[in-house]
Amino acid sequence: MSLNLVIVGAGPAGLAAAWSASQSKANVILIDQYDQAGGQIWRGGANAAPKRYQHLFAQQTKLRYLNKSHVLGANDDHLFLATPNGPQQLAFDRLILANGARELFLPFPGWTLPKVLGVGGLQALVKGDLQIAGKNVVVAGSGPLLVAVASQLKQRGAIVKALVEQAPLGQLLGFGRSLAGYPSKIMQAAQSLASLRNTPFYPNTWVVAAEGNGAVQQVRLSNHHSIECDYLACGWGLIANTELAQQLGCTLKHGSVLVDRSQQTSVNHIYAAGELTGIGGEDKAIIEGQIAGFAATGNYHAASQLAHKQAQARQFSQQLATRFALRPELKQLAQANTLVCRCEDVPFEQLQTQPSWRNAKLQTRCGMGMCQGRVCSGATQYLFGWGQDSVRFPIHPVSVADLLMESI
Image (cartoon, rainbow, N blue to C red; front, side, top):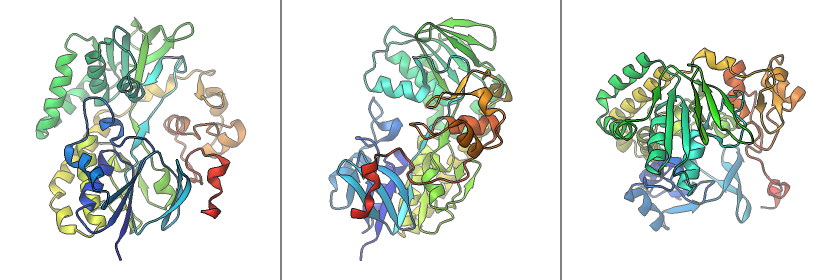
C-alpha cells in the first residue's frame, strides 16, 4: 500500500518537497490556498519557479494538486479543508508543513491610512498589475526584502523616494561581510543595490508617522526628515505561520517550528520546511523542502547529501535574525489612540492594561475580527510579549457550510 504524503503550501519549500517526494512511490498531495503555485517569491512577475518544479504538474499520476484550498485544522492523521468543491477531510500517513510566513505589521500613527501597505503586499499588487509607474514610494522597515522590493518597484517605473532601514549601519556592514560565503546572494544584492544607486538611503532610521488627507501623502522619519509620497511600503520582518503546527502539537522555539536534521518536528510523522522553521529566504526553503520530501518518503541517504547546504542555510537565517533584530524604540511608536487591531478598532491604550492575549480578546475583542488576529497578534507579541495560549479550529475564517464536515 502506497504512502499518503500531504504537503501544505506550494511555495519554494512545498514545491521542493513535492519534487523530492515524487521520486518515490508515495501518493503526493500538494495543497495551497492560492490559484497558482509558487508562493510570494515565484507567483507572477519575472521570477518563475524553476522548470523542474513546473514539470511536477504534468505528472498527474504522481502528484495531486489542490489549489484554492484552505486548511482549517487537523488531527493526528487528517486535515480538514475548505475547497472550491466544498469541505473535505484528507487522510495522511506523513505530513510536510511548508505554509510559509506572513508580514509583521507594527502600529504607528497613520499606519491605517490608505496606500500604507506591507512591503510584500505592495510587491504582490504590483505583480498583479497595479500601475506603479511614476508614483512616489517610500520603502521602510528592516531586512533584505526592502532592497529587493525597492529594486522591483524601480524596475516597474516607480520613483523610490527613500529606502529607510532601522538597523544600524554597523549591523548592515556586518551582514554584508557575512555574505562572503554565499556567492549567489552577493550577486543578487549587487544587482538590487546597483539599481538603487541614486536612491536616498537612511540606515538607523525608522518611520514615526504617516500623514495625509484620505490617503498617505507624507512620511515623517526618526531623523526629522519628512518625505512626500503616494505609497508607503513598510516591512518589519516576517512571522512564521505556526498555527497548524501548534494545533498538531509540534514544539516551537523562538516563534519557529523546531525540527531535526531530517526536518522532522517533535511529532514523528510530521515535517516542516521553509520560513516555518526560521526566516531564511528562497535558498533555505528549497534545501529544507528537498530534505523533508526525501526524509518523509524514507530516502534518508538523499536527504543526508544536503546536510552541508542545510547548515549553510541555517547560518544565513541566524545572520538575518541577528543583524536585523528590531530595536526597542519601535515599541514606543504607537500613541494612545493608535489602532492596533484594525478589524475591531482597538486602540493601543485599551491594550496597555491587559495582562495577556486571552484577556485582551475577552475585554477588547482584539484579534476577534475578520483576520482572526493574523495581523494584530504579531504586533501584540512584539509590543507586550503576548503569546497565543492555544490554536483552535478553524485556523482560517470560514463559512458555516464549511464547518459542517460530518457529512463528508
